[in-house]
Image: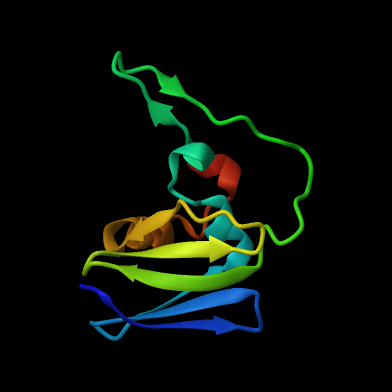
Length: 110
């Protein structure tokens, strides 16, 4: 299964229509907060220890402004945000995992 359409609705909601016909609505803030890149989610070193990213309490202008989505091969999209953050690559599988977590609060997914 793969997305067939992406549409930004009122700059607050990303609607994805999938090849099987179902539609997913991602609130933009949640979409950004779930960015899969290492600087947002942390990364594992060669010994298996997880290095968590440094969380800054400062609100950055443009953080929740989605400026573009670009295809990455036939398996993902790359998002660019108003604060110039552009390292998140959202695979189709990751988008479906995000959809399954939409009813949970961010604290429940940690």
